[in-house]
Image 1 (tube, rainbow, N blue to C red):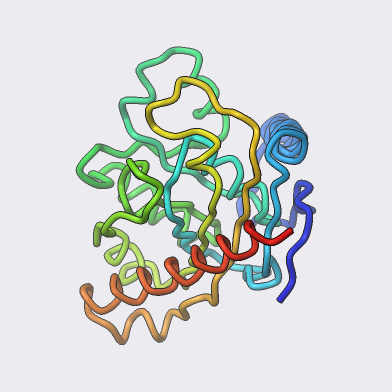
Image 2 (cartoon, rainbow, N blue to C red):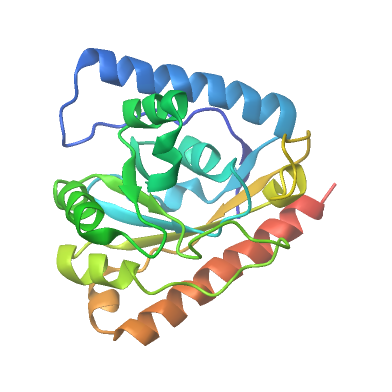
Length: 228
């Protein structure tokens, strides 16, 4: 088992070319997020070597706070595509920010047709998409039941799944708090679920397996976070 201090992971090459300005902006945001993650939240990550070095994959995480998307994205050594609720695009400044980072809008009930097509397109061209299958932030710090929408993405794109979990983000920024407070956050990367395994399971069995893997990551994250 390895756990390490998190600085922005060294970026690898994505299959999709983006403009220099787009790449430079993404890396600038990573540096800023990395400074915040280290300085205020003592972010650590275990098992970063489990991330596939190439090809698209679906990154599935528990959802504890607003800190989750940037912090999970920070530990991945390649550019990550984020999904965001369509309601977040109503704020002009925040819409500009997440659009500049290639966010994919989703509706509150699922991906929606446009979001589904765009997510599939990015996965098929070898990129990484981060989803939170609980659908919303936890109200109490515990994992909520997973929604099954991600299984269609896996079946249609043939990409593997990488489960991850983070602990401490809820304590740092619970749903009822307007602003975060300093704390300690631990991320654990789980064993990937291969394309062959995912395709051999029906939707219910795949959801159950992902739920099991994320919960195992969460249990390990809590153990590591509690260690001196």
